[in-house]
Image 1: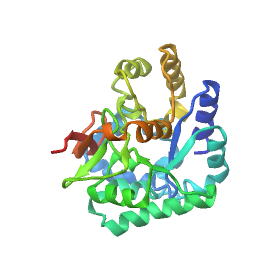
Image 2: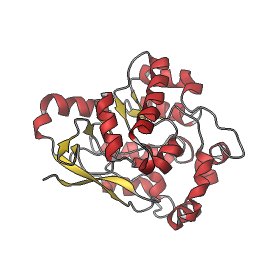
Image 3: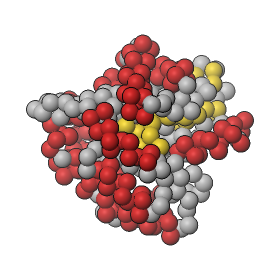
Image 4: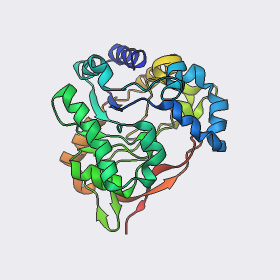
Length: 283
């Protein structure tokens, strides 16, 4: 947070672009992800990405050999600087590791508590209700989608997919717009591809492209790659906007045309375990 976010803000200011930040407001227990080593795909990712360089000692040991520290509220001044620079902020769960590793077994009340704790922390800092949320690890369930709808979020970015949609479960449309991540992430490609910026640029298609950036990756060891990518995007005359701007445009002008789709589980090359994915057209 202290290193990556300010660096990203400076980069965004340099290129005069607006972005969406999603923050986990609870304890940093990233070190407990070590329990995922039993998964061959997670072990391969650790061997491929050089986690010490990618994440740093503090992140790798937080919640194990080092005490967990609050991610969001402990850095309130940094967080306040984000909207001051013209960007938006949403929530990214409360306890990132707990959500990512345990959402499958969480009851509705547990999910609501996780989200409300993050919402309360957000309101203490910004004095208002958050309008957006993004599920840790792109993991959501029918229960979490229903809770998000009930809590009144304008939009969510919980899944991987190709275009914005409304989720459908058991024949009912969830009225929280989903704006999926459409492009791969840097940590999915590190160690698999050499020229990252070129790979990302070639992955872009016509229309909306959504890239998820991590402050501990593109804001630290891979900031040069990210700068090269941004310069390549701008050379293509692309318009870079926040997800909130996309959501407002869709909901105000094109709501009835938004597809209604199921959400399914799937796998993404370079990422360990399942993620929620945009599914087929709902019946």
